[in-house]
Image (cartoon, rainbow, N blue to C red; front, side):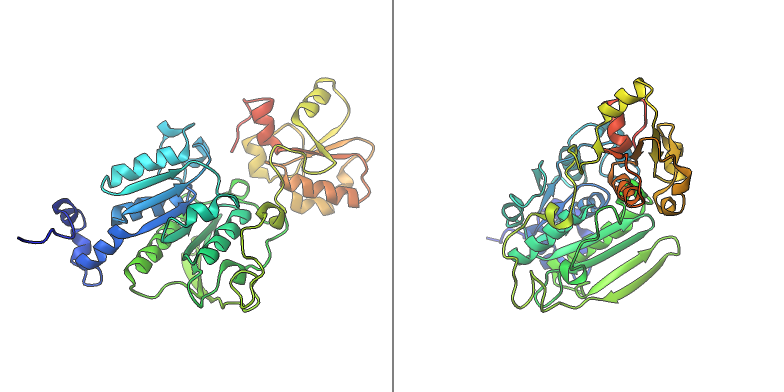
Length: 381
């Protein structure tokens, strides 16, 4: 009696172009079929990663996301469509993945990836892919990978630039070796504030997926110890060497972090929808003052192109120009500062108070929260 084939007839047909590669072949395709990959985030990076790993035949994919699809996602998050707006991202993503390849298993984790659940979720998979868009979760993904002994296929994007690497391999560096400390809150705008070329995460995400497949197959040279930098405007790639830091608190010789920590506290991430400082003002209070026609200056510290998308009719002085333009502001009037989501304006409030302004407040949550709570006709972006 003949043995049962390692791949079913449908799988042989589907993966034929892999099977003819000597570096993959039947044995390699079976490795892919037996592998499991966790993708943290189903946004710009997670979209191409998920679709290509599914098409390649990785047998089990886990997707983690707690967000819902918004129109502003569709410019780059190709795993979602217009009909998915308002739906949970993991639900939309899972359906797209199954359309690509119904032969694989898809686990939906419709929850935030946090210190409380990350070790439990991550332990179930062979490789973890970082498709996140904030520093707190990047450090969390990194630490969990090191603690669990899982490879971390890292990628990040901003405007026209991208990065990719592999962290957490034995003897190799981790994300903390490259970035021991996070930037100060608000110093580096995220993609929501700074923008991103829609196709860029497609490039970086496919690099991450490629690295994962190579690790599963055990072929080629991984990006461990190397940081790949992409400038899409010039279409140039550069490579930087990254070495393991023996003093790294996670992967070093004497680690001091042996379990997930409070990453919001570590990164100084302000809590959303809560007061970020004693000088915050809620959208409802600003609306009351505006309706009462109270004298004040509404200061917008975003960029001109953002102001053109939507505004509250206030004075526009971009944050980077504010230190040299404070003389344009009336010190006798209360000043309400806002940006898109509240981080840049919080920095502006501190700058103005350091310059001697006494009655300065920050619109908590920025113009986006104003749109959600006060006036939905103001576009969000």
